[in-house]
Amino acid sequence: MATFIHTADWQIGRQYGQFDVESGALLAEARFDTVAGIARLAQARGVDAVLVAGDVFDTQAVSDRTIRRLFAALAAYAGPWVMIPGNHDAALAESVWTRAQALGCVPANVHLALEPGVVRVSDTMAVLAAPLTQRHTYDDVTATFDRLDTPAGVLRIGLAHGSVTGKLDEGIDSANPIAADRAVTARLDYLALGDWHGCLRLDGRTWYSGTPEPERFRGNDPGDVLIVGIDAAGAEPVVDRLRVARYRWLSWQAPLLVDADIDALAQRLAPLGSDDVLRLEVSGSLTLAAWERLQGVLGEADARVRALRADTTQVVLAPDAHDLSTLGLDGYVADVANALQAMQAEGDPAKGETARDALRLLVQFQQEATRAAGSPA
Image (cartoon, rainbow, N blue to C red):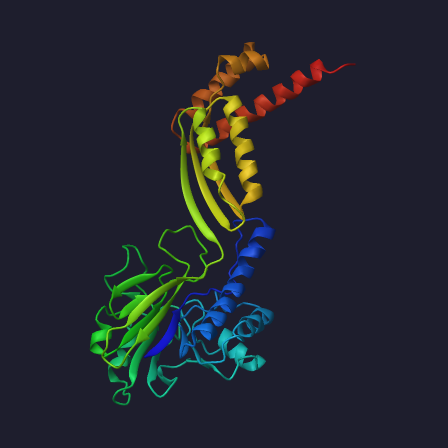
């Protein structure tokens, strides 16, 4: 049996500007660690090759140091690697790949398939490569597979990057199309694809591996590599998914209908830790006391998880009579507070956010004034 690892979309050099600098740096570093883990896995499993289906790099403009670090991360596996460029790192006349070659940092066991063709990785397996030579093309670059010859009895493994026609979610960019029946027309034993960042089986011979380290809040099942075994040419592949991701990216919604819902949210957040990246969308109507409690819960969670993006723009701040009485809001100030509450309820998100922020400031100033008035002279 021939075995190989199918992986893709490493996106090395990706930036995480939506998070603070420390968290962004750690998320970027995890991508190198995951690649090194794939190399160790390949060595431990004794696979015949590792196939990387495009977007090794997130951009052509990564630093020389990043290029060197990527290829150094492969050191644990001495067998053949086959890499193709994807849409993020297309094989342009001057590209991240030509820079890597000029730096002299590409190991001898790493095959950069920068042109369409056949890469023989062993006596029993040939990789039919369809690299992207520009970011967007509207021709099916895998069509060449139908015309590529390989010796009888040798496994034909396709390696490509793009969107399989009619198989992905609506709205996926139509650039870089791949025929849904390519494995059949090209007599492939397996078609290893990249571009879709989640693990996806299209048929018994056609798979997307997904990115091995999640980098967005899309719930399309990323974080794996595929270990593929094939007994002989024409045999059905045996595909095993193996989790390799460091971080878990979660997207939650938290409607707060009563104050007790904040305690329930706190319990839900409690198990999360330093390997979790969370986007939390909070909605509801809260009293001042509940709002302060929510801020405490979010602050505690932010200290535990790797990164937290909490969106509270849909929260309506609604001081009750007790809040207003406690803060001593009366007369004109009370009228302003009531007007701001009414603005939040109008349904205009921009006005609602402005009104909520203004009400928070009003409350903050009133709290400070109350504390100052109670301080000893």
